[in-house]
Length: 435
Image (cartoon, rainbow, N blue to C red; front, side):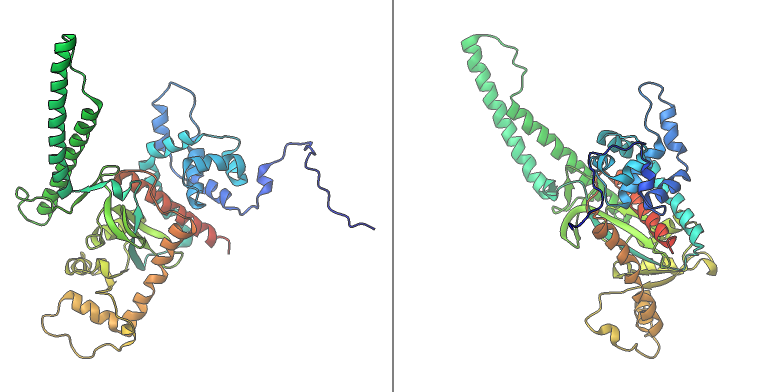
């Protein structure tokens, strides 16, 4: 007797329309994202559309926000990829409830409302902290380099700009002379003409020359701002020849990351150790973290509504000023304990016992921090840092595949990073509720 098989009728039509919600388990992430977004205040987005009475009715802001948040939760970041998933993927179809906005609509929604989407991070964080009944204790802080939506090959140094500017001036001068000679020859042969048309080659060089002049002004202003911040004379400050300007995303910077030299931004995140929630986040164009500890401590308190008891950070955040800031908070209840590495450890150095006896007279805060991290307690506390903040960056960059910002300009990049952190917190909260 031949082997029987289960019924398979691909041409069979359904007698009743199916419910897509029945195709997914009740605890699926898509329902959790939908419920969370329904609790958020989207009045700022609604206000934009209420001012405009013309045209077709827009898509519901709840729908568009859910699509973006779920996309960032599942590693689907591009608007074209989201549109494709709306046609092929059951969770996206369930979330859209029969709607199918095109990629341009999705992209425009993200660009127009990026500031509001950035502010949603605090709402989701407050929800997560309340559900987990979490009080901030020791918070781990770190930064990661992410590529900008710009190529490092579109950058030019200040020294190269000066050379290129002189070269273009000479080329423009030669082209003008050639054009004038050609006009005189044509006038003699054909008579008078308008003569106000610029050759295409000349237009191209003059356009490049104008862009380089503008880029030089930006670099010169940066040099003056830097000098003023450091207490030096801004009037005499000049850029160094190696200072770079990117013509695609001028606010991005050349910086060294894990993948080598990148044109990008330095994304900052502070993570608590219980649910691995991001409790503070920001983006800076600074290539290193030396100046980021103070603003990040302030952002943690602002975004989470709580002040951490201790900060764990690597040696990139270590400086006398940063340690002084942690120690000189207002009142003893405001003081934050620091566990900040003072330098890179040599192989096997962490196994050496702490030195005994008092510190030498005149020891700096960095010296005291180094001795503190050599104690058993200091070693144990600091060792937890890489198990808290590093996995978060791994989940964002490796598991979900976010390696490059889609938007340009620091303001929009900050909004996109906040959207990534918001999605991470939703995933952590969803995972915690499965147990």
